[in-house]
Structures are given as C-alpha cells and as structure tokens.
Image (cartoon, rainbow, N blue to C red):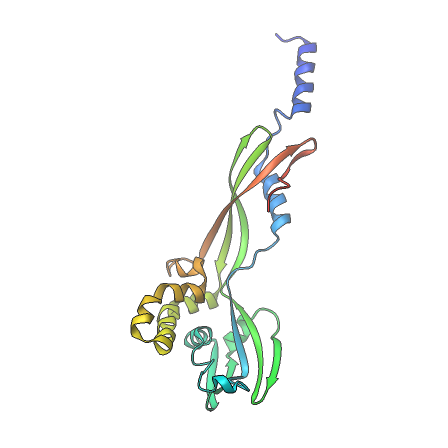
Length: 228
C-alpha cells in the first residue's frame, strides 16, 4: 500500500505536470465555437429590379441577364421571375417564395440609364453545428478533428435540382456545345460551390472536415497560438 507521502507527491506531480488532465471534447468544442462563430454556407447572389446592360456601350450586345446562371437557376426553381422591358433590359423580381428565402435586406442599390437595380442574397446552405470527431494528444500538444455540419435550405434543394441543366445551357449560349460539355462540371461547381456540386441530390446536409491544433498551458488546453 502506498504511503500517504507517496500519494501526496504523486498528486502534486499530476497537478503540476497535467498528467491526468486531458483535453475533453466539450472543452475543445466550446473553444472552437467561440473562435469560428457561425461559418457562412453557400449563398447565391442575384440582381433584382430593372437590370441588364445599362450604360455599357462597349458591351451593348452582351446580355448580363440572359447569361447569368444564378438568375436562370432561380427562375427555373421558381424564386424569381424575369420579363423583358427592351433589348438587354429586364425586370427581375422575387416571387413570394423568393422573398421568403432572401437573407437580410436587399442592398447595393444602383441607378444607371434605364437600370434601377438591387442585389439580394439567397442562402443555399446554412451552418448548423460543430462536431468534434476525435482528439489525439501527444504530450503538451493535441490535434482535434472537427466537422462543421451544414443544412441545405429549401432554396438550395430547389436550385440543385435544376443547376446542372441551367449551367450547361448558359455555357452553350456563351461558348457553344463543345465547350459547354468541357465546362460542365466546373460551371456547376462555380454556381453551387464544391460542397453542393459534389453532393448527391438525396442528401440534405453535408460536412466540412478539418483539424485544429491545441497546446497545453499552465491554465489548461487552448487553441495553439500558431493556429490560423
């Protein structure tokens, strides 16, 4: 049986060296959530109002609305309507479900020649929560493996269903059939972002994995100062 003195010495050593103090998932998660806040998911940006080619004489034959994959996708998904006013000038308006899907207020108001336009942001996915999937300690250092879980919004689900066909049609209009075929995957990724573009349509959440380094200090485990 250990003597009282031996037990006391062992306890002191453990307190000073931290030999029994491991980094818990709860502690790591709390620190990480305080650091990262709420990461932004994929957001689709769209012009609304009277928009098109206004005051751009050098691009008078280029139609910025006809060749917008974002607007075309939102039209196909039922979130905006587009009606012609005159050559290369359009009235782009949110539908009722489009108004409900917009995050925040419209912004970026511009008036130029025939145009009177705003910009809106429509989230296709939103951050839901953070998972701590594992902790590997090596002395006074630890690697924490994480997963940020994002939920696909109704707008995201609707846009994803039409995105591949829409992005191909826009490329075909702009570049022709052969180049549209060549750009098919990259154009889809540009429209949706890599996470959504590569996700099966049946999924309604996705995970962004990562790892963060922690260091042990006298007052406990903390995110490494060198961690960006």
